[in-house]
Length: 513
Image (cartoon, rainbow, N blue to C red; front, top):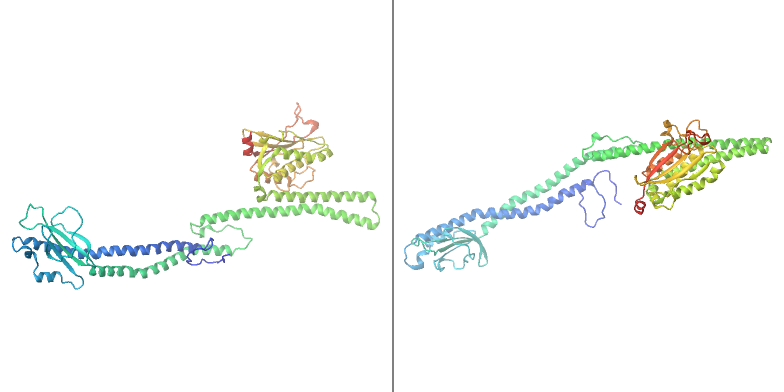
Protein backbone atom coordinates (compact mmCIF):
# COMPACT_ATOMS: atom_id res chain seq x y z
CA UNK A 1 0.00 0.00 0.00
CA UNK A 2 1.54 3.36 -0.97
CA UNK A 3 2.36 5.64 1.90
CA UNK A 4 0.19 8.72 2.05
CA UNK A 5 2.12 11.98 1.92
CA UNK A 6 0.93 15.46 2.67
CA UNK A 7 3.18 16.97 0.00
CA UNK A 8 3.77 15.83 -3.60
CA UNK A 9 6.84 13.80 -4.37
CA UNK A 10 8.88 15.64 -7.00
CA UNK A 11 9.34 13.96 -10.35
CA UNK A 12 9.42 10.24 -9.77
CA UNK A 13 9.34 8.58 -13.20
CA UNK A 14 6.99 5.61 -13.59
CA UNK A 15 8.95 2.35 -13.31
CA UNK A 16 8.25 -0.56 -15.60
CA UNK A 17 6.46 -3.40 -13.87
CA UNK A 18 5.26 -1.24 -10.98
CA UNK A 19 1.68 -1.91 -9.81
CA UNK A 20 -0.93 0.33 -11.40
CA UNK A 21 -1.83 2.87 -8.72
CA UNK A 22 -2.69 6.53 -8.66
CA UNK A 23 0.50 8.43 -7.81
CA UNK A 24 1.46 12.02 -7.32
CA UNK A 25 -0.14 14.56 -9.63
CA UNK A 26 3.09 16.56 -9.45
CA UNK A 27 5.14 13.55 -10.56
CA UNK A 28 2.62 12.69 -13.29
CA UNK A 29 2.79 16.16 -14.82
CA UNK A 30 6.57 16.25 -14.49
CA UNK A 31 6.88 12.87 -16.21
CA UNK A 32 4.70 13.95 -19.12
CA UNK A 33 6.75 17.15 -19.53
CA UNK A 34 10.21 15.58 -19.22
CA UNK A 35 9.55 12.44 -21.26
CA UNK A 36 8.95 14.38 -24.53
CA UNK A 37 11.92 16.60 -23.72
CA UNK A 38 14.24 13.61 -23.27
CA UNK A 39 12.83 12.02 -26.43
CA UNK A 40 13.27 15.16 -28.52
CA UNK A 41 16.85 15.77 -27.37
CA UNK A 42 18.49 12.85 -29.33
CA UNK A 43 16.34 13.75 -32.33
CA UNK A 44 17.67 17.30 -32.03
CA UNK A 45 21.25 15.95 -31.96
CA UNK A 46 20.67 13.92 -35.15
CA UNK A 47 19.05 16.87 -36.95
CA UNK A 48 21.87 19.16 -35.80
CA UNK A 49 24.42 16.74 -37.24
CA UNK A 50 22.62 16.68 -40.60
CA UNK A 51 22.26 20.46 -40.71
CA UNK A 52 25.90 20.91 -39.66
CA UNK A 53 27.02 18.71 -42.52
CA UNK A 54 25.13 20.88 -44.98
CA UNK A 55 26.47 24.08 -43.46
CA UNK A 56 30.04 22.77 -43.49
CA UNK A 57 29.79 21.53 -47.08
CA UNK A 58 28.50 24.71 -48.70
CA UNK A 59 31.66 26.92 -48.48
CA UNK A 60 33.94 24.05 -49.46
CA UNK A 61 31.61 23.12 -52.33
CA UNK A 62 31.83 26.68 -53.63
CA UNK A 63 35.64 26.59 -53.42
CA UNK A 64 35.78 23.18 -55.08
CA UNK A 65 33.40 24.32 -57.81
CA UNK A 66 35.56 27.39 -58.52
CA UNK A 67 38.62 25.17 -58.87
CA UNK A 68 36.79 22.90 -61.32
CA UNK A 69 35.47 25.85 -63.33
CA UNK A 70 38.94 27.49 -63.47
CA UNK A 71 40.46 24.23 -64.65
CA UNK A 72 37.74 23.92 -67.26
CA UNK A 73 38.39 27.45 -68.55
CA UNK A 74 42.09 26.69 -68.81
CA UNK A 75 41.41 23.48 -70.71
CA UNK A 76 38.95 25.15 -73.07
CA UNK A 77 41.41 27.96 -73.80
CA UNK A 78 43.90 25.48 -75.27
CA UNK A 79 42.44 25.54 -78.76
CA UNK A 80 45.55 24.89 -80.92
CA UNK A 81 45.45 21.26 -82.09
CA UNK A 82 49.09 20.49 -81.37
CA UNK A 83 51.04 18.13 -79.21
CA UNK A 84 48.15 15.74 -78.56
CA UNK A 85 47.29 15.19 -74.89
CA UNK A 86 50.32 17.05 -73.51
CA UNK A 87 48.78 20.38 -74.36
CA UNK A 88 46.20 19.83 -71.49
CA UNK A 89 48.78 18.98 -68.88
CA UNK A 90 49.01 21.57 -66.12
CA UNK A 91 52.24 23.32 -65.45
CA UNK A 92 54.05 21.92 -62.42
CA UNK A 93 53.43 25.16 -60.52
CA UNK A 94 49.69 25.05 -61.28
CA UNK A 95 49.44 21.40 -60.30
CA UNK A 96 51.34 22.09 -57.08
CA UNK A 97 49.03 24.99 -56.31
CA UNK A 98 45.95 22.88 -57.01
CA UNK A 99 47.13 20.19 -54.63
CA UNK A 100 48.37 22.63 -51.98
CA UNK A 101 46.18 21.71 -49.02
CA UNK A 102 47.60 20.77 -45.63
CA UNK A 103 44.41 18.99 -44.53
CA UNK A 104 43.00 17.22 -47.57
CA UNK A 105 44.19 15.56 -50.74
CA UNK A 106 43.01 17.13 -54.00
CA UNK A 107 42.59 15.10 -57.18
CA UNK A 108 41.86 16.37 -60.68
CA UNK A 109 41.14 14.73 -64.00
CA UNK A 110 40.66 15.87 -67.61
CA UNK A 111 39.05 13.43 -70.09
CA UNK A 112 39.11 14.05 -73.82
CA UNK A 113 36.33 14.07 -76.38
CA UNK A 114 36.48 10.28 -76.61
CA UNK A 115 36.80 9.76 -72.84
CA UNK A 116 40.54 9.25 -72.90
CA UNK A 117 42.60 10.57 -69.97
CA UNK A 118 44.34 13.75 -70.99
CA UNK A 119 45.67 14.87 -67.63
CA UNK A 120 45.38 14.24 -63.90
CA UNK A 121 44.60 11.16 -61.82
CA UNK A 122 43.39 8.03 -63.56
CA UNK A 123 41.99 6.61 -60.30
CA UNK A 124 39.26 9.26 -60.06
CA UNK A 125 35.95 7.60 -61.05
CA UNK A 126 33.81 9.07 -63.82
CA UNK A 127 30.14 10.06 -63.27
CA UNK A 128 27.67 7.18 -63.60
CA UNK A 129 24.39 9.09 -63.91
CA UNK A 130 22.76 9.28 -67.31
CA UNK A 131 21.35 12.80 -67.02
CA UNK A 132 21.46 15.01 -70.14
CA UNK A 133 24.88 16.63 -70.57
CA UNK A 134 24.74 20.43 -70.41
CA UNK A 135 28.10 22.10 -71.17
CA UNK A 136 29.54 24.27 -68.38
CA UNK A 137 26.92 23.16 -65.89
CA UNK A 138 28.61 22.43 -62.55
CA UNK A 139 27.67 19.23 -60.67
CA UNK A 140 28.65 17.71 -57.31
CA UNK A 141 28.69 14.14 -56.05
CA UNK A 142 30.12 12.02 -53.25
CA UNK A 143 32.50 9.27 -54.35
CA UNK A 144 35.58 7.30 -53.33
CA UNK A 145 39.18 7.27 -54.54
CA UNK A 146 40.68 4.08 -53.32
CA UNK A 147 39.74 3.97 -49.63
CA UNK A 148 39.24 7.72 -49.29
CA UNK A 149 35.80 9.31 -49.41
CA UNK A 150 35.88 12.43 -51.57
CA UNK A 151 33.64 15.25 -52.68
CA UNK A 152 33.76 15.72 -56.49
CA UNK A 153 32.96 18.82 -58.55
CA UNK A 154 32.71 18.11 -62.28
CA UNK A 155 31.48 19.69 -65.51
CA UNK A 156 31.49 19.04 -69.24
CA UNK A 157 33.13 21.62 -71.48
CA UNK A 158 33.16 22.26 -75.20
CA UNK A 159 36.69 23.27 -76.32
CA UNK A 160 37.10 26.47 -78.32
CA UNK A 161 36.89 25.87 -82.02
CA UNK A 162 34.45 22.92 -81.48
CA UNK A 163 31.21 24.95 -81.66
CA UNK A 164 28.26 22.93 -82.88
CA UNK A 165 29.86 19.62 -81.94
CA UNK A 166 28.01 17.30 -79.55
CA UNK A 167 31.23 15.98 -78.08
CA UNK A 168 32.41 17.40 -74.76
CA UNK A 169 35.35 16.99 -72.42
CA UNK A 170 35.05 16.10 -68.74
CA UNK A 171 36.85 18.06 -66.04
CA UNK A 172 36.73 16.81 -62.43
CA UNK A 173 38.24 18.09 -59.20
CA UNK A 174 37.90 16.05 -55.99
CA UNK A 175 39.04 16.51 -52.45
CA UNK A 176 38.91 14.41 -49.30
CA UNK A 177 36.53 15.33 -46.44
CA UNK A 178 38.90 16.17 -43.60
CA UNK A 179 38.15 19.91 -43.39
CA UNK A 180 34.42 19.27 -43.75
CA UNK A 181 34.39 16.71 -40.95
CA UNK A 182 36.31 19.03 -38.63
CA UNK A 183 33.97 21.93 -39.35
CA UNK A 184 30.95 19.68 -38.86
CA UNK A 185 32.30 18.57 -35.49
CA UNK A 186 32.97 22.15 -34.46
CA UNK A 187 29.41 23.17 -35.34
CA UNK A 188 27.96 20.19 -33.44
CA UNK A 189 30.11 20.96 -30.41
CA UNK A 190 29.05 24.59 -30.53
CA UNK A 191 25.37 23.58 -30.57
CA UNK A 192 25.28 20.43 -28.44
CA UNK A 193 27.60 21.42 -25.59
CA UNK A 194 25.39 24.37 -24.52
CA UNK A 195 22.44 21.97 -24.52
CA UNK A 196 24.10 19.95 -21.74
CA UNK A 197 23.86 23.09 -19.65
CA UNK A 198 20.47 24.23 -20.91
CA UNK A 199 18.75 20.84 -20.48
CA UNK A 200 19.35 20.51 -16.70
CA UNK A 201 18.48 24.16 -16.32
CA UNK A 202 15.22 23.61 -18.22
CA UNK A 203 14.40 20.60 -15.99
CA UNK A 204 15.06 22.71 -12.90
CA UNK A 205 12.88 25.56 -14.20
CA UNK A 206 10.07 23.10 -15.05
CA UNK A 207 10.30 21.60 -11.56
CA UNK A 208 10.17 25.05 -9.94
CA UNK A 209 7.28 26.14 -12.18
CA UNK A 210 5.27 23.03 -11.35
CA UNK A 211 6.00 23.40 -7.64
CA UNK A 212 4.84 27.00 -7.84
CA UNK A 213 1.75 26.13 -9.89
CA UNK A 214 0.69 23.24 -7.65
CA UNK A 215 1.13 25.16 -4.40
CA UNK A 216 -2.57 26.26 -4.36
CA UNK A 217 -3.52 22.56 -4.29
CA UNK A 218 -1.24 22.03 -1.30
CA UNK A 219 -2.86 25.01 0.41
CA UNK A 220 -6.33 23.60 -0.35
CA UNK A 221 -5.25 20.22 1.03
CA UNK A 222 -3.93 21.88 4.20
CA UNK A 223 -7.18 23.77 4.73
CA UNK A 224 -9.27 20.61 4.31
CA UNK A 225 -7.04 18.57 6.63
CA UNK A 226 -7.16 21.24 9.32
CA UNK A 227 -10.97 21.13 9.46
CA UNK A 228 -12.86 19.56 12.33
CA UNK A 229 -14.84 16.44 11.49
CA UNK A 230 -18.06 18.27 12.38
CA UNK A 231 -17.31 21.24 10.09
CA UNK A 232 -19.40 20.69 6.95
CA UNK A 233 -19.41 24.32 5.82
CA UNK A 234 -18.61 24.89 2.12
CA UNK A 235 -15.01 25.42 1.01
CA UNK A 236 -14.18 28.95 -0.15
CA UNK A 237 -14.21 28.74 -3.96
CA UNK A 238 -12.60 32.17 -4.39
CA UNK A 239 -9.22 30.93 -3.13
CA UNK A 240 -8.76 28.02 -5.52
CA UNK A 241 -7.53 27.96 -9.16
CA UNK A 242 -10.10 27.92 -11.94
CA UNK A 243 -9.10 24.38 -12.94
CA UNK A 244 -9.89 23.07 -9.46
CA UNK A 245 -13.07 25.12 -8.98
CA UNK A 246 -15.40 22.41 -10.45
CA UNK A 247 -13.89 19.85 -8.06
CA UNK A 248 -14.38 22.19 -5.10
CA UNK A 249 -17.96 22.85 -6.21
CA UNK A 250 -18.61 19.09 -6.33
CA UNK A 251 -17.10 18.70 -2.84
CA UNK A 252 -19.27 21.55 -1.56
CA UNK A 253 -22.33 19.91 -3.06
CA UNK A 254 -21.38 16.64 -1.34
CA UNK A 255 -20.84 18.47 1.95
CA UNK A 256 -24.24 20.15 1.65
CA UNK A 257 -25.97 16.81 0.98
CA UNK A 258 -24.03 15.16 3.80
CA UNK A 259 -24.95 17.99 6.17
CA UNK A 260 -28.61 17.68 5.20
CA UNK A 261 -28.52 13.89 5.64
CA UNK A 262 -26.84 14.13 9.04
CA UNK A 263 -29.31 16.79 10.16
CA UNK A 264 -32.20 14.55 9.15
CA UNK A 265 -30.64 11.62 10.96
CA UNK A 266 -30.08 13.67 14.12
CA UNK A 267 -33.65 14.95 13.98
CA UNK A 268 -34.93 11.44 13.33
CA UNK A 269 -32.97 9.98 16.25
CA UNK A 270 -34.16 12.74 18.55
CA UNK A 271 -37.78 12.13 17.53
CA UNK A 272 -37.34 8.37 17.84
CA UNK A 273 -35.92 8.72 21.36
CA UNK A 274 -38.81 10.99 22.29
CA UNK A 275 -41.37 8.59 20.84
CA UNK A 276 -39.86 5.58 22.61
CA UNK A 277 -39.73 7.46 25.89
CA UNK A 278 -43.52 7.43 26.34
CA UNK A 279 -44.22 3.65 26.08
CA UNK A 280 -41.09 2.80 28.07
CA UNK A 281 -42.05 5.26 30.79
CA UNK A 282 -45.53 3.73 30.82
CA UNK A 283 -44.05 0.28 31.25
CA UNK A 284 -41.92 1.41 34.16
CA UNK A 285 -44.79 3.30 35.82
CA UNK A 286 -47.21 0.37 35.61
CA UNK A 287 -44.57 -2.07 36.87
CA UNK A 288 -43.72 0.17 39.85
CA UNK A 289 -47.40 0.74 40.60
CA UNK A 290 -48.32 -2.93 40.69
CA UNK A 291 -45.20 -3.67 42.72
CA UNK A 292 -46.23 -1.11 45.40
CA UNK A 293 -49.76 -2.53 45.43
CA UNK A 294 -48.40 -6.03 45.96
CA UNK A 295 -46.06 -4.85 48.71
CA UNK A 296 -48.95 -3.07 50.46
CA UNK A 297 -51.18 -6.10 50.14
CA UNK A 298 -53.85 -4.14 48.25
CA UNK A 299 -53.40 -5.75 44.83
CA UNK A 300 -56.64 -7.37 43.72
CA UNK A 301 -56.77 -9.71 40.72
CA UNK A 302 -58.78 -7.14 38.73
CA UNK A 303 -56.26 -4.37 39.35
CA UNK A 304 -53.34 -6.66 38.48
CA UNK A 305 -55.09 -7.73 35.29
CA UNK A 306 -55.72 -4.08 34.36
CA UNK A 307 -52.08 -3.14 35.02
CA UNK A 308 -50.80 -6.11 33.05
CA UNK A 309 -53.07 -5.13 30.12
CA UNK A 310 -51.62 -1.62 30.16
CA UNK A 311 -48.10 -3.06 30.29
CA UNK A 312 -48.94 -5.27 27.29
CA UNK A 313 -50.27 -2.27 25.32
CA UNK A 314 -47.19 -0.19 26.17
CA UNK A 315 -44.84 -3.01 25.19
CA UNK A 316 -46.81 -3.51 21.98
CA UNK A 317 -46.45 0.16 21.16
CA UNK A 318 -42.73 0.03 21.89
CA UNK A 319 -42.29 -3.09 19.76
CA UNK A 320 -44.26 -1.53 16.93
CA UNK A 321 -42.11 1.60 17.15
CA UNK A 322 -38.90 -0.44 17.02
CA UNK A 323 -40.17 -2.43 14.03
CA UNK A 324 -41.07 0.77 12.21
CA UNK A 325 -37.63 2.25 12.95
CA UNK A 326 -36.02 -0.88 11.53
CA UNK A 327 -38.27 -0.68 8.47
CA UNK A 328 -37.33 2.98 8.03
CA UNK A 329 -33.63 2.12 8.19
CA UNK A 330 -34.16 -0.68 5.67
CA UNK A 331 -36.04 1.67 3.33
CA UNK A 332 -33.21 4.22 3.48
CA UNK A 333 -30.55 1.59 2.72
CA UNK A 334 -29.35 2.45 -0.80
CA UNK A 335 -27.58 -0.91 -1.24
CA UNK A 336 -30.80 -2.75 -0.44
CA UNK A 337 -32.73 -0.61 -2.91
CA UNK A 338 -30.30 -1.44 -5.73
CA UNK A 339 -31.11 -5.17 -5.53
CA UNK A 340 -34.05 -4.99 -7.92
CA UNK A 341 -35.78 -7.74 -9.83
CA UNK A 342 -39.06 -8.17 -11.70
CA UNK A 343 -41.79 -8.71 -9.10
CA UNK A 344 -45.53 -9.26 -9.46
CA UNK A 345 -47.23 -6.39 -7.65
CA UNK A 346 -50.60 -8.16 -7.45
CA UNK A 347 -49.12 -11.21 -5.71
CA UNK A 348 -47.49 -9.08 -3.02
CA UNK A 349 -50.71 -7.07 -2.55
CA UNK A 350 -52.85 -10.21 -2.16
CA UNK A 351 -50.40 -11.77 0.33
CA UNK A 352 -50.41 -8.57 2.39
CA UNK A 353 -54.23 -8.35 2.41
CA UNK A 354 -54.39 -12.00 3.53
CA UNK A 355 -52.07 -11.25 6.47
CA UNK A 356 -54.28 -8.37 7.65
CA UNK A 357 -57.62 -10.21 7.39
CA UNK A 358 -57.70 -11.36 11.06
CA UNK A 359 -57.05 -7.83 12.25
CA UNK A 360 -59.72 -6.43 9.92
CA UNK A 361 -62.25 -8.98 11.18
CA UNK A 362 -61.41 -8.07 14.77
CA UNK A 363 -62.13 -4.40 14.00
CA UNK A 364 -65.21 -5.26 11.87
CA UNK A 365 -63.70 -3.67 8.75
CA UNK A 366 -64.36 -4.95 5.23
CA UNK A 367 -60.83 -5.50 3.84
CA UNK A 368 -60.55 -6.78 0.27
CA UNK A 369 -58.56 -6.89 -2.94
CA UNK A 370 -60.02 -5.50 -6.15
CA UNK A 371 -57.75 -5.80 -9.15
CA UNK A 372 -56.29 -7.89 -11.92
CA UNK A 373 -55.45 -11.56 -11.40
CA UNK A 374 -51.90 -11.98 -10.08
CA UNK A 375 -50.73 -14.30 -12.88
CA UNK A 376 -50.93 -11.45 -15.40
CA UNK A 377 -47.34 -10.74 -16.53
CA UNK A 378 -48.26 -7.12 -17.27
CA UNK A 379 -48.36 -6.41 -13.52
CA UNK A 380 -44.61 -6.88 -13.07
CA UNK A 381 -42.42 -4.00 -11.90
CA UNK A 382 -38.68 -3.75 -11.30
CA UNK A 383 -38.23 -3.44 -7.57
CA UNK A 384 -37.05 -4.84 -4.27
CA UNK A 385 -39.69 -7.37 -3.11
CA UNK A 386 -39.10 -6.80 0.62
CA UNK A 387 -39.39 -3.01 0.32
CA UNK A 388 -42.49 -3.18 -1.88
CA UNK A 389 -44.10 -5.56 0.63
CA UNK A 390 -43.21 -3.11 3.42
CA UNK A 391 -44.79 -0.27 1.42
CA UNK A 392 -48.13 -2.10 0.97
CA UNK A 393 -48.09 -3.29 4.58
CA UNK A 394 -47.71 0.25 5.92
CA UNK A 395 -50.48 1.58 3.66
CA UNK A 396 -52.89 -1.15 4.74
CA UNK A 397 -51.92 -0.74 8.40
CA UNK A 398 -52.50 3.02 8.17
CA UNK A 399 -55.91 2.47 6.52
CA UNK A 400 -57.02 0.00 9.21
CA UNK A 401 -55.89 2.37 11.97
CA UNK A 402 -57.98 5.29 10.76
CA UNK A 403 -61.04 3.44 9.41
CA UNK A 404 -63.82 3.05 11.99
CA UNK A 405 -65.77 -0.15 12.56
CA UNK A 406 -68.04 -1.01 9.66
CA UNK A 407 -65.79 0.79 7.18
CA UNK A 408 -64.21 -0.37 3.95
CA UNK A 409 -60.52 -0.76 2.99
CA UNK A 410 -59.70 -1.78 -0.56
CA UNK A 411 -56.36 -2.65 -2.15
CA UNK A 412 -56.31 -2.43 -5.94
CA UNK A 413 -53.67 -3.23 -8.59
CA UNK A 414 -54.39 -2.31 -12.22
CA UNK A 415 -52.40 -1.70 -15.38
CA UNK A 416 -52.17 1.61 -17.24
CA UNK A 417 -50.95 0.54 -20.72
CA UNK A 418 -50.92 4.10 -22.06
CA UNK A 419 -48.69 5.43 -19.27
CA UNK A 420 -46.65 2.17 -19.21
CA UNK A 421 -47.11 1.99 -15.43
CA UNK A 422 -48.65 -0.40 -12.91
CA UNK A 423 -51.00 1.37 -10.48
CA UNK A 424 -51.35 0.42 -6.80
CA UNK A 425 -54.23 1.97 -4.83
CA UNK A 426 -55.12 1.66 -1.14
CA UNK A 427 -58.31 3.46 -0.16
CA UNK A 428 -60.48 3.58 2.93
CA UNK A 429 -63.65 5.23 4.24
CA UNK A 430 -62.04 6.84 7.25
CA UNK A 431 -62.03 10.54 8.19
CA UNK A 432 -59.68 11.36 5.32
CA UNK A 433 -56.76 13.80 5.30
CA UNK A 434 -57.28 17.55 4.95
CA UNK A 435 -55.56 19.07 1.87
CA UNK A 436 -53.46 21.29 4.15
CA UNK A 437 -51.97 18.22 5.86
CA UNK A 438 -51.36 15.98 2.86
CA UNK A 439 -47.73 17.02 2.53
CA UNK A 440 -47.07 16.84 6.27
CA UNK A 441 -48.31 13.29 6.82
CA UNK A 442 -45.25 11.93 4.99
CA UNK A 443 -42.91 13.51 7.54
CA UNK A 444 -41.54 11.18 10.26
CA UNK A 445 -43.52 11.14 13.52
CA UNK A 446 -46.24 13.47 12.21
CA UNK A 447 -49.82 12.59 13.26
CA UNK A 448 -53.00 14.54 12.66
CA UNK A 449 -54.31 16.25 15.75
CA UNK A 450 -57.67 15.10 17.06
CA UNK A 451 -57.58 11.76 15.26
CA UNK A 452 -57.47 9.83 18.53
CA UNK A 453 -55.36 7.11 16.92
CA UNK A 454 -52.15 5.87 18.48
CA UNK A 455 -49.38 5.17 16.00
CA UNK A 456 -45.67 5.59 15.44
CA UNK A 457 -46.00 8.29 12.80
CA UNK A 458 -43.46 6.48 10.61
CA UNK A 459 -45.63 4.40 8.28
CA UNK A 460 -46.22 7.03 5.59
CA UNK A 461 -42.64 8.30 5.88
CA UNK A 462 -41.48 4.75 5.06
CA UNK A 463 -43.91 4.66 2.12
CA UNK A 464 -42.52 7.95 0.78
CA UNK A 465 -38.91 6.72 1.04
CA UNK A 466 -39.65 3.45 -0.80
CA UNK A 467 -41.60 5.28 -3.52
CA UNK A 468 -38.66 7.61 -4.16
CA UNK A 469 -36.17 4.74 -4.33
CA UNK A 470 -38.33 2.96 -6.92
CA UNK A 471 -38.75 6.15 -8.99
CA UNK A 472 -42.50 5.84 -8.64
CA UNK A 473 -45.17 8.55 -8.30
CA UNK A 474 -47.31 8.95 -5.17
CA UNK A 475 -50.58 10.93 -4.99
CA UNK A 476 -53.08 11.34 -2.16
CA UNK A 477 -56.73 12.36 -2.55
CA UNK A 478 -60.23 11.58 -1.21
CA UNK A 479 -61.85 8.20 -1.69
CA UNK A 480 -64.86 7.84 -3.96
CA UNK A 481 -65.78 4.34 -2.85
CA UNK A 482 -69.37 3.04 -2.99
CA UNK A 483 -70.89 6.50 -2.89
CA UNK A 484 -74.64 6.50 -2.60
CA UNK A 485 -76.76 8.42 -5.06
CA UNK A 486 -77.23 11.23 -2.55
CA UNK A 487 -73.46 11.73 -2.25
CA UNK A 488 -73.12 10.30 1.28
CA UNK A 489 -70.80 7.50 2.23
CA UNK A 490 -72.34 4.22 3.42
CA UNK A 491 -72.98 3.97 7.13
CA UNK A 492 -72.10 7.64 7.54
CA UNK A 493 -68.39 7.05 6.87
CA UNK A 494 -66.06 9.98 6.15
CA UNK A 495 -64.57 11.04 2.82
CA UNK A 496 -61.72 8.58 3.24
CA UNK A 497 -58.21 8.69 1.85
CA UNK A 498 -56.88 7.12 -1.33
CA UNK A 499 -53.16 6.55 -1.88
CA UNK A 500 -52.23 5.98 -5.53
CA UNK A 501 -48.73 4.84 -6.52
CA UNK A 502 -47.68 4.49 -10.16
CA UNK A 503 -44.72 2.15 -10.64
CA UNK A 504 -42.84 2.05 -13.97
CA UNK A 505 -43.80 -1.22 -15.63
CA UNK A 506 -41.11 -3.86 -16.10
CA UNK A 507 -39.81 -4.08 -19.67
CA UNK A 508 -40.16 -7.86 -19.57
CA UNK A 509 -43.80 -7.44 -18.62
CA UNK A 510 -44.40 -5.03 -21.49
CA UNK A 511 -42.79 -7.33 -24.01
CA UNK A 512 -44.86 -10.25 -22.73
CA UNK A 513 -48.07 -8.32 -23.26
